[in-house]
Amino acid sequence: MGEVAMYSFKNDYSEGAHPNLLKALQQTNLEQHQGYGDDVFCTEAAHLIKETFMLNHDEIHFFVGGTQTNLTVISAFLKPYEAVISADSGHVAVHETGAIEATGHKVIPVSSHDGKLSVAQIKDVLKTHIDEHMVKPKLVYLSNPTELGTIYQKSELEAIYEYCQEQNLICYLDGARLGSALCCEKNDLLPSNLAQLTDVFYIGGTKMGALCGEALVINQPMLRKDFRFNMKQKGALLAKGRILGLQFSELFKDNLYFELANHANEMARLLKVGISSLGYQFMVDSDTNQIFPIIPNKIVALLETKYLFTRWDSTNRTETVIRLVTSWSTSEKAVKEFIQDLKKFTVLELRGKLMDS
Image (cartoon, rainbow, N blue to C red; front, side, top):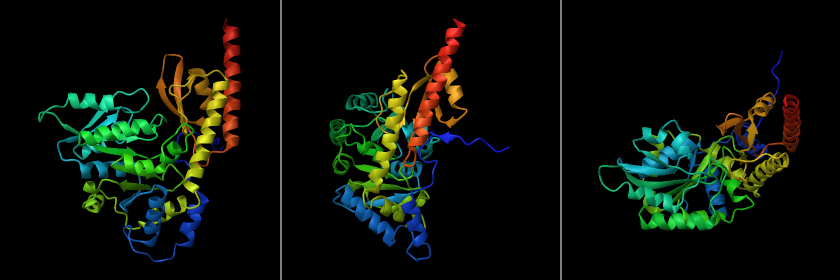
């Protein structure tokens, strides 16, 4: 007997890549190009990114994945005794197998109910790390959107960046799902703001329609020296860098990157509206492509017979927070079926309670 096909809302990288990217890879497959990011595709991609984000420099580097990007950046920019400040839900704090610690740098986690950091929280960390008997906080790690799907408003990022400059801290923004944040209805950040309000940021491709790839932008000139040496040492300088450059070149042609992000956000919005209409609450208010509804355990178990998703947290003995993630490829049909099944299982659960009473 064959396995029952289950639709996945578990992540935004279950599918391969957008057809435009695959077509471009196939069409250029037999062409010969320079290696290690010195090819025409990486040059074109960097130019398109420079235009989109209104950069005044060309310091753009292409990586395969987010964890590799984070550990290369942090290990390159920090001295051995310097540390990272991160929300306790931050990717570097909980989802990179201690990759940052393995490079010799402590991650200082800060409790955050919405996945974001504030100036007040950063100040508190500095107040408790006062001398050479402790690690020295040096880099502020932000994610936009966060691991909880929330976003930073322009005023929040302005305040953090201003404080980082005052305290000589590096402001680093992880943009694994950056398109989703920039296309969020509540977002007031422009792409160009990231060049002005961060020292370093990266543009995610893996979760935004590429087979793989992240584009790192180093805004702060003091951080650029010898960076490719660090990339090579960390295994990030890909011989066939053309694969990354070509994908980003396609993503940033004809607004494709933002179209894919808008689609993912819209599918999540439809899920959120449908789930809300059935009376369910959410752990956090997210308007990007990750949502966190609170569902009775019995209904979660029924949903797991048809769908893949993550059990995020247990709120009590009877309910669980689940994470549902939509992607550039999520179909509206699948979203509607999920809502219909949730409605059906909810009715069954209510009937069971009535019979028990």
